[in-house]
Image (cartoon, rainbow, N blue to C red):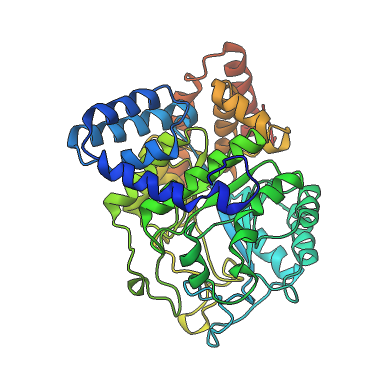
Length: 472
C-alpha cells in the first residue's frame, strides 16, 4: 500500500504505485489536454505529483516539451534567480566494507590505493581549498566502522571548522556519509553540520539489493529510511540523490519525487537539495556494463521535470558532468555546482598519478575554481559562496517558508553578491575580478528593497576596505 506519511520504506516508496504511475504516463504521453492541464498547474509553482511528473517525462509532443523546458527555466528564476552556489567535495577516507558493484571503493577492489586522512592532512586539504576561495564543503567517506567511525567524522568536522587561514574559512560543512542511527544523526547535528546528504543510488528494491550484494548498505529499508532518522535526530536540511544509469531512469525519477513528497507529508519540509549524478568511469568501473545509461537529452529533461515537480529544492550537479552538459542544465534548474573538485583522498594538496588512484569517480570538468567562476560570470550567473541561512538559523521549515513566499531573495541576492565580492578581493584572477565587479554593480540594482540595496552596497564597500563576513 502506498502511504506518503508512513515510516516504512516500501510504503512511501511503493513499487506498485510507481509501476502504475509509469503505466499511466505511457498511456498519456500524447494526451495534449492532460499535459497542458499539468503544465497549467505547474505554472503556479507549487509543485506537481510524482504521477504528473511521470507524464511530463514521458511526453512526446514537441510543443509541450518546449513548454516543459520554458517552465523549468521560469521556476528556477523565480526561486533562485541567477545565483549559483559553489562548493567542493572533501574525501576523508576510501576505506569501505560494502560491496557496491558500481563504486571502486567496494571492499573487493584490491588495487585501489586505500587511504584515510589524519587530522593534520585534513588541515592541509582545507587550507588548499580555502586558498582556492571555497567556503562550503561536502565531506565524504566510505562506510567502515573501524576506519571511519562516527567519532572520526565528528573530529574531522571540528578540525575543519577550526581552520582559519588568511581570509579563508569553511563556513558550512555538509556531510555525505552512510546511513546511521538517530543518535549519530543527533551528534552530527550538534557538531553544526549543514545538510546531511545521502544518495539512494536506486529506488528499485530488487535492483538495489543486487547492486549492493554485501555489507550493511545491502539493507534497502535501513538505507531508504535514513532521512527519517536524520530528521528525528534534529537535522532538518537533508539532501536526496539518485545515481542515474543504474536502473530505469523513469522509475528513479518517480521514486525521488515520492521521497520528496514523503518528507513534505511527514515532516512538513521537503529535501533541501536533490542531486542528479550519472554513473561515470571510475577505476575498475565501466559505465558500459550498465544497460540503463541516460543520454544527455534525457538527462536534461530529468533536470527540468524535477525542477517543475519540486520547485523549492536546490539542485546539484557535480564535476562528473562535462562543461557543456553543466551549461545546459544550469538553465533548466541546477542551483549548486562544484568547482575545482578532486575526488581522491588527499587530492587537493597533491594530485595523484593514475597508478596511485584513490578516486571514487573520474572528473569530467577539470577546470579550476577561478575558471568556473569566470565562466559563470560570462553567462550572467552570480557565483555565490553564501552560507548565511545556515548560520542565521534559517534551516528546515524556516528556510522553506521564506523560499516559497519569495522573501528569501531579500537575503540571498545581497549575500551572494557580498560573498562574490570576498572571492574577487581575495582569490580571483584579474579577468575574473573585472567581470565580477561589473556583475555586482548590475545585480545590486535587482534588489528591490531600497534599504537592503543600500546596506548591501555599504557592506560591499567595507569588504573592499578589508572587512569580511557580512550577511543578512
